[in-house]
Each structure stands twice: as C-alpha cells, then as structure tokens.
Length: 76
Image (cartoon, rainbow, N blue to C red; front, side):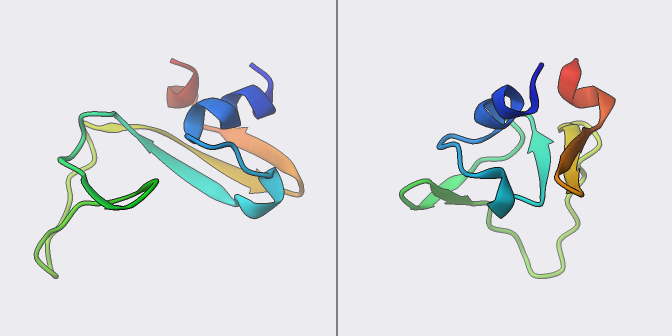
C-alpha cells in the first residue's frame, strides 16, 4: 500500500506528511473516547494511571528522512 493511502486511512482528515512525525494506531474499540472538540477526543484517567496497550495496539509508524517506516501490525 502506498504511504499516502495508508496515511489517509490512519487520519480522519488527511494532512500533509510534513506535519506528521509519527503515529500510534489503536483498535477502534480500545477505549471509551469522549469528544473534546470537533475531531478531537480524550480518554480520561487518574493522573498516575497506567494504560495496558498490549491488547489494542495495532502498530506504529514513524517518518525518517521523509520516508515512512511502518510496523508489521499496520499491514495485518
């Protein structure tokens, strides 16, 4: 899959790759998100809470020297 197509899937409103340095992709049902503002959501916890992402992490991506590097989970 081309990087630009993958970026379009990861973000509700695609934005220029120059403004995105990395992403963490969680399953849709990972947490009970609360709408904070249009297109912004928050998951509220206690200040010292530890979130277990082991069951909800799909994968990660990072941009290095203009190229996106993706974990294998993104392509699953």
